[in-house]
Image (tube, rainbow, N blue to C red; front, top):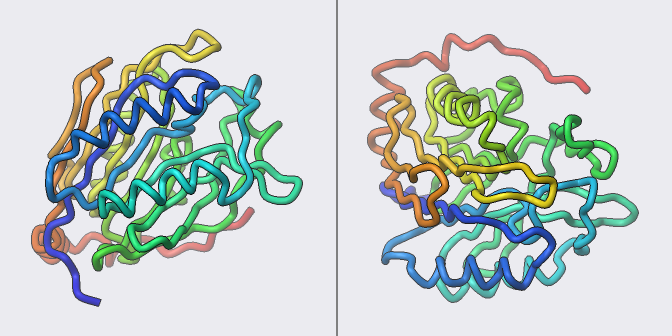
Length: 262
């Protein structure tokens, strides 16, 4: 597959109105209407239709339900890969499911592996068990979700991906951890890393300040948005730079090999 040298990534940082799916659609649609030309991939925050509060979550959807159809329509119209998580049911199980809506109508997904026990997420959701990598425009993309970022073994890169994505609902009280962990995941995995966090207050009274970023494999920030701001974060990821960086600093070849269990 031919690799597109530059992948332009956009993160949409904004407040999420708790439990109001239609209002959240409209808010993100307004931001999507302002996308500049040439954007290839758009990442939305975790639980972008409802907000993240498992104790009061009611707006679940069936797998491939209305939000996925909404995402597909936008992906086709804008010719982008549109990504974000929603509470999706399949059978009798509920997942924090990270959907990838492709411009050609295809859909892929990843289920959040590490459920946030401090908020009771594990009492409502089923954890995923499969690491995944999707290829778009020749770029190999590894999906993760929020709390997954605290477990470096789950994202360990043995050369299988180029871009790591984190939609998140990381509270303001742990903002330093969020930004530090994003940089660490980029550096240790020698991969571009993009994290899209929400802003505002949720219905549990928790505050979120965003701090969404796109980080180069060296740890250099190539796109960011200030605290509590609403807007786009844009970053151009270069395959030439990625390959040059890995060739100059071949740290991945020295990584310990291991098998994950549980």
